[in-house]
Amino acid sequence: MTAQIAAILTIDGVATGAIYVLIALGFVLIFSVTRIIFVPFGDIAAFTALTLAALETGQVPGTVGLTVALAILASAMEVVSLLRSGQRDRIPRRLLFYLVLPLVPAALVWASGSIILPMPLRIVLSLALILPIAPLLDRIVYRPIADASVLLLLTVSVALHFALVGLGLLFFGPEGVRTKSLTDYTMILGGIPISGQTLLIVIAAIVFAALLFVFFGFTLSGKALHATAVNRTGARLMGVRPEKSGTIAFLLGSLLAGVSGVLIAPVNTIFYDSGFLIGLKAFVGAIMGGMVSFPLTAIGALCVGILESFAAFYSSAFKEVIVFAILIPVLVARSYTAVHSEEETEE
Amino acid sequence: MSLLALSDIAVAYGKAEAVRGVSLSVEPGQIVTVIGPNGAGKTSLLTAAIGLLPSSGTITFDGQDVSRLETEQRVERGLCLVPERRELFADMSVRDNLVLGAYTRRRETAKIKSDIDDIYDRFPRLKERHKQHAGTLSGGERQMLALGRALMARPRLLMLDEPSLGLAPLIIREIFRIIASLRDLGVSILLVEQNARAALETADFGYVMETGEIVHDGTAGDLIDDPRLIASYLGGQHA
Ligand SMILES: Nc1ncnc2c1ncn2[C@@H]1O[C@H](COP(=O)(O)OP(=O)(O)OP(=O)(O)O)[C@@H](O)[C@H]1O
Ligand SMILES: [Mg+2]
Image 1 (cartoon, rainbow over the protein chains, first blue to last red):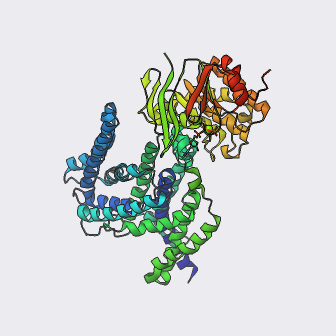
Image 2 (cartoon, rainbow over the protein chains, first blue to last red):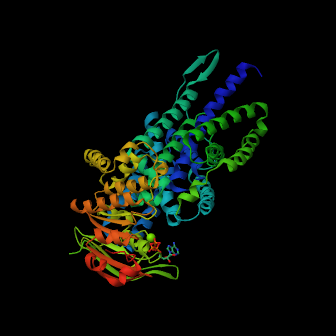
Image 3 (spheres, rainbow over the protein chains, first blue to last red):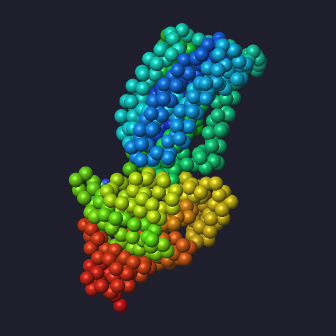
């Protein structure tokens, strides 16, 4: 292998890795606040790509139907639970949150009909359509079992993933999509071409990682989220609602997954079931960070991307095998160094 | 009208009843103490009062029935608990712990800043260590932080579960001095203590709890001279 090929593979790997970084950060974010390993996270990324592709061709994306169905179900559950606890007065506010807000982007898409919007608007709209899905799933699926063990939550996540893949087929159809590229710009660095798309992906990963850092380090919302992750009882005694922290975590995580979906759509063909593999590779990165550390997670996810790129060069048939095979030594090493903080902080 | 009134509260862990038919009340501006041996159900009672444990009976706060409200809603109304386990945010700084204490008043940014300074004046040790993680503080510093964090909420009623637990005598005196001074700020206090004498010397009214029930009550002055209590709780060394 020449140095030039190695450089090209590395750049390629960094681009793929940066996508995994976005999703892996979301995994850690959601896990640390809610103890849920949100397996369908890759599906959220894939659905964003499918949504964007539908908007490009002037179709109503399947996301609209999915969001409407979830919003109605979640609202019904909220109303029933509020009626049961005799808190009628809180119903309007909750409906605003669980019914009206999620339906705004869906209504916008519906209203725009077959008009093809400009690219930036399409991207914003795709993200807005995707954002409510995970928080709604949280309300419908996870909140009733919020006190369950991590293992049960994981089992439910896996089931939810398969349900979502089925819904994906139903709402999006079996065709693969690839969206228009976001930029045609190409940069030559030391004789190696770097596409504008790659630059965008890397910049997005850096920007969102920095935003997370600022959010947790400097905002009260971020601190409240962190507090929920560290000590749920303590947070409740301060008036911080774990459910609200969970919703924020799911929203932020979805934004990360959505952005990665938008970025990956022009370079990979995405099907309704493509999310699983993307999510799983990001998950390997998150495991490297022990599901708690954001910086280690980012490094881990980046390594996965680079490894995958080199593995594909040597033996494209085995690239997935190679990537997942590194999970084993990582897990072994982890099991020796892990601090079992999570069971300890739970009371 | 009582600020806090618990009436006929019962708490059970599965079949084991930890609290049975307990009624007590705290008047505005009062310090009320609940004393009793280990396992009497004091912690269970406070945990139920804040809503972290399910209980039967009625809990009235400021004239309103809060029995069915979530913990967070009770906190928003000015009921606050410093739990036995303190529940600090271990990997966050002392300052961030204090900031989160004021979560329910998060819009009053300027006041929160000056309140943090007030807490630092009260507990200079916390000021010296404002950047240190709560998990690395000494036992006494942790108690101070737990108390300080609770005060940041500007509670109307503060429930303290054994604030002197594991502290040196000198610091215990300091903690009780602070508790007494809180009354002057208009904070009412429900104080659970092992340290019965110190608690009764600080409080206005006291209840004695044994095996889940209240067995005596009275003004703190009466209880401290009660011969039945001197033998079992006050160590008999009353001057
Ligand atoms: N989570 C639990 N599950 C089962 N039993 C419990 C639980 N928590 C407390 N108990 C029992 O309930 C009873 C009352 O406990 P509680 O902690 O309220 O007592 P306490 O008066 O605060 O005691 P101490 O002075 O030692 O703190 C005890 O017998 C205890 O063993
Ligand atoms: Mg106790």
